[in-house]
Length: 394
Image (cartoon, rainbow, N blue to C red):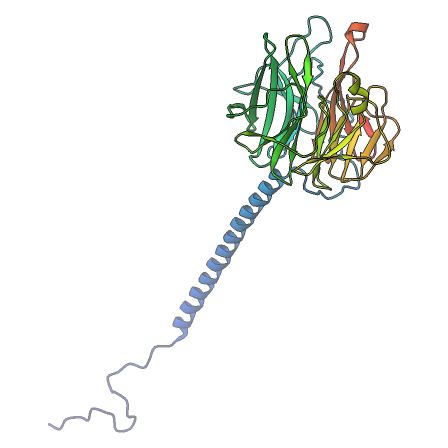
């Protein structure tokens, strides 16, 4: 029997081989795979972009918290939450004087600590902690609190903590100082190896050099208090005494703040020894991190030691107010004092505390006005400076 040829003689194809399958299904499968991969890639890009944004936002928030006087965007209108309130704001009760106040940019609140609750013979000091959130005051109840002592308080941007410096005169005329820090929830006592032993000292945070500066105060003896003019700096761990070539004369109770526009600390007034009271009450000094320099700019705002000095980040000038016999407001432009408001500021006799509220871009003042010794019961008051005028909160 004759074998058939392997190839067909007329077509040249394999006689028993099927025709090639159509590529249509392969193309459909490839298109589906491509679309799926593209969709997954888009989702991945969106997720990574969101994560990157969150990380950047967190970094930016930390930077803002570490520098309480970063130049803010100037607002055309005053913050409605703090300057214009239709309803009365909650106040610190009972009213008190000699409190201390600082703004915590990490937690966006103004802290108020301590004070003397009355002016009567049975005056009592308190160790209460209160917070201003832009709408009113709220008492906080931390797990741990400092003792009921007087002192001064600032925000330490280097360690991102509020630092409280307290003092107490012991029976033998010695000073017992304490330091505490606020972490947003509770107070924690600090134990530096070296501690300035003074009362009534002035304190401010030096943003340019990332340290707290403490100046002056008094050293009590058995019957008197001797004023000093020592300068100390806090590096986050310990106090270090500085020895500048020039210093203000000995005094306590001077007003002091950091002038971010000129990157220096400014000090005004204070109470000196004996006949020196009147001579130091109107002096202006600046600290550049190395030494003090007295400024002889024209204009003498107040012959008063009980004044307040706050840097306004919006107008980029230092605000001076709170004299005993004047409700005027002055600003320091780096060379001289300029009167910006002839009246309206809270006055000093029962002025408790003040600070700059960066969140609201305004100065906030808590004051207890009135004197129970003369029959006028002190009342709590909260004042706001919006950059152009003072307003007493209803």
